[in-house]
Image (cartoon, rainbow over all chains, first blue to last red; front, side, top):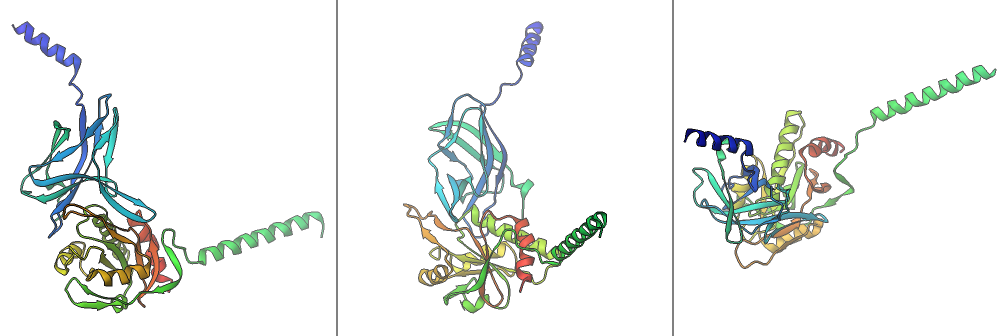
Length: 139
Length: 203
């Protein structure tokens, strides 16, 4: 029995930890400004698979609604539009940043603790991440 | 003059010309690198609106100080707060460098339907003291924007969460109340820190 466990550990170590299919990094969520019922989320999302992933829905228990938006500035005009999906080609990353693609987080419910973001591809949950305001608190 | 003397004379002449050129260049004031300065200030059109304290204001509100004027709306979670943060950070940097006078930051709402003076006050106060928020009726806001070549357009939406397309530029108003220069996006703190003392000092 002891030998079996040792073998299993050795096999796992040899394989290494499996690479997660989707990874979120540099996550930043702004706090709603005083009197406002909305804030924005920014991050980099990396697709470690060979297939294109389409994030079609994002939800959060801490906000009534989350939408995927994109700000563009063309000919000096700033426009913000909702996107149907966040498309991440295989073995690629997409950056959500100020003045570009971003999450719009609407009508906060409870921001006392951390914020959880759940990402869906169709009805399939594909990723969940937590964010704590404390490290980037401005106020 | 023999050939050798001639070459020495030419060399001295060139050195003198180069020295004069460099001296003149060092004395010449720097030019703005990012701001577009208008050939002559444009007058601000007449309007009748309110500030964030709900006090009536007109075009004379721009007289007496330099203003950085941005057109946006409070229900804009991305580019509007980002731009105002850049302006506030630039103002802080200029203050650290001892720049006087410091410009005032002004947000003109292009969404008066949702931007009441009360909402606007909380918003502009977030980015620092002495900021000015302007709102009022759509007609009066349009008088101001159209006279300055600023575009905005409300987008149709099934929900109250609509967007407003708007010009991304920041305008610089002279203390005489004239539209003097503009910064197109993207807005970067260093661009303002470099150019504003030149624009504001050139009068």
